[in-house]
Length: 70
Image (tube, rainbow, N blue to C red; front, side, top):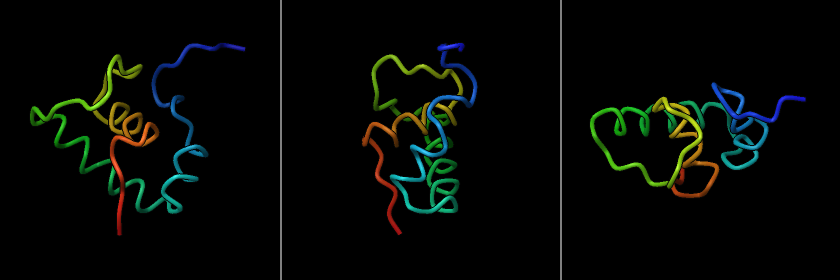
């Protein structure tokens, strides 16, 4: 099994949906956070495994640095 974390394989959708309780909330919240990162917003985690803003936003959600609300 390949243990590298690249692309959209990390973090897994199952981990993220268990946090947000809704795929819709996850998608909307991630997109908003990714846009902020792309516009120069600070990255809230150290040494992100992903290089793209979407992946970084998902990692931030997984680590509890970004909370998605209603």
